[in-house]
Length: 492
Image (tube, rainbow, N blue to C red; front, side):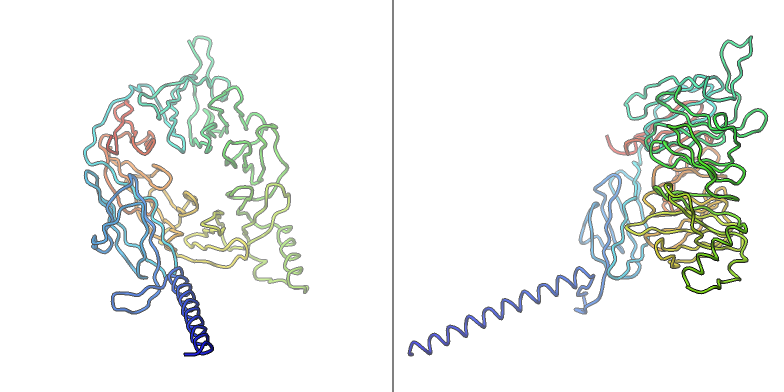
């Protein structure tokens, strides 16, 4: 074979090899792109688009069964590609109770289950402290501190993160107006009735709503580390707040309604803003943004008409919408002008939340729930409930929203885009941690996931008017017969 033919054949081999390599790369990229998009080859060798389940548990290392299949024998924390549609997930761990839920996997989407909690089956209750004389308790959001109140001016703070909870005295004699200082009294007495006690996320302040002896409301921001720096809002500003909320982690800013007027309180500056909105019925906040529900006034209708004219470039706005008597508005804390978002026919409650990277407005009008995207106000979902909730609250990380009256609850699951109505045992419920709820009926302690599923009974003879909490994901605290009780809920 002459040199020219040999060189030509070698060139063809090189070209063919490079073409094969390029084709392999292209095919690999396409296959990877399809896998990332959720496409997979099923057992029948057909290509179908799937989704992914990401699951973790407390404690970690639980065995995972999906649709009864344990062949793959995965444990939490793990991820698995699943076909679209319904799947039943069961978590088990030796020595613990089980957890189960039916989920709906959507094509090309990730479904997270990060909140399942398993409880140790064999638990022993320990008496930690005798608490005779305690009238109410309140536990911090991270369950690290519990406040014990009584009828004196000396309250207690318990540190629950220690093996033996330590106690710190808290002098509230100069904080509340509801203090009796009779000449014949050995010490001051607290005469108020605590209605609510809300902690900030730093566990540094507690916002109290107290009913005084003459049935008036008093609002006090208690500094648990330096009580002398506490702020009695009612006394300081001389106004009657009907509701107050903490706006940030350390209670540097508050927002309240007084006689329908929405005002902001600067705690460090001990100052109150001018009226931010009138005829306000309720409000909520997310970071520096406020959403509120109010009754319309002539000025509100004028604002809306001007905004409508500006948006449409014409002189007419929707007259039927203008005539609606209520609205939902929003504004940012550094802005003194609000925007009207929606007009409604009846009073509403609205909250602002973020799930993944998208923010949403959830509007509750009587028994109808509507969810709107924040930026373009498009309707994301709508649900009709079988009851009319009195309150609405955003859960942890915006993953769920609870609407409730007493123990009747509707849980909006943003992950599953669904609502589930359910009834807790007893007359009311409280938060056990960021994702679980609890209630007490006839001395029996029940716990639930945020959607009411995986209901379990954990203890008997539990005081229903005292707090329950889980600390460090290992101790369950509750009160029984004037004693603080503790149980290990994980192996130790």
